[in-house]
Amino acid sequence: MSDVTKNTDDNQPNKNQSNKDTSDKKHVLKDSSHILITGATSGIGKQLATDYLKAGHNVYAVGRDEDALAELETLGATSINVDLMDRDKVKAAFAPIETIDVAICGAGMCEYLDMPDFDSEVLMKVMSVNIGTLAHAIDAVLPKLIASKGRLVGIGSASAYVPFARAEAYGSSKAAIHYLMKTLQISLAPHDVAVSLVAPGFVETPMTKQNDFPMPFLQTPEQASRAIREGIEHGDEVIEFPKKLTLPLKTLGALPDLVWQQVSEKINRKKNDK
Ligand SMILES: NC(=O)c1ccc[n+]([C@@H]2O[C@H](COP(=O)([O-])OP(=O)(O)OC[C@H]3O[C@@H](n4cnc5c(N)ncnc54)[C@H](OP(=O)(O)O)[C@@H]3O)[C@@H](O)[C@H]2O)c1
Image 1 (cartoon, rainbow, N blue to C red):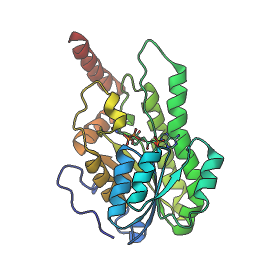
Image 2: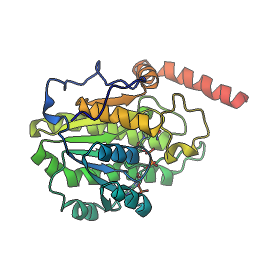
Image 3: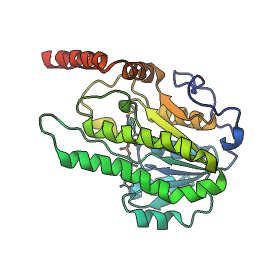
Image 4: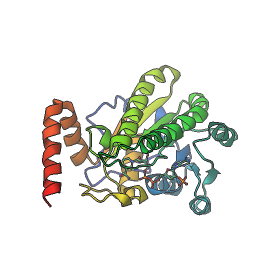
């Protein structure tokens, strides 16, 4: 189904990147596909759930916020109230679902570290929530995705492209997610499961409310949802947006470390001068 029309901003489908997909249409959404979304109760996931419901798909909305789940139910979603950190409960909660064509794993959290106060508890919490919620969801959806020859979508972050001070915990967890999704792209291909990695820049959601620094090219949840839905529709392996942020970050990340270190020192010096 083509519920996603051409984008007007720079969140263009990833035509020129590693999406060897478009000739292989088998993973493109059908009418009334079955789409499971974790993190569906807030921000990007909630917008995705709303947009997919509007387009007539069957949405399994996963989260813990009862009000948000009830709101999505009124739009037609099947809500699943589960703590994704509990592997057995996730398996039990997903067991009755017969078919999943696309599983979008977007649950996550962000907390920053402020040096020199290295707080290992924060690091462990962010790593464990961002990896654990994704890992337990994959555990529970994979047999269904193998059966449907479906698509697994994991949400990383453009912050994984270069090291940002204060994002030691969040960026590390997202870098791990990038590695995981990219290895699954290789290892699940023989099992006919396609894998997409989403790397958003800044999106205006409850998560970014805490950010007290400039967020260049801040996207709305609607823009983020559109970019992700377009990427899925095109079968993209990497869905990153907005390009005006992700491309320079990727370029910087590919240069010798010294270059980014100097840029980042300059940014910090400017901040401290204020
Ligand atoms: N916003 C950005 O700028 C940005 C940029 C790059 C990447 N991302 C990534 O995009 C994803 C969505 O971000 P967002 O900004 O939309 O965040 P958000 O508004 O804070 O939403 C986070 C979601 O994660 C769910 N969640 C967290 N822990 C959970 C748990 N243990 N069990 C079940 N659900 C859990 C929350 O559900 P409940 O509250 O109902 O439990 C909520 O729906 C995250 O992975 C984030 O890292 C965001």
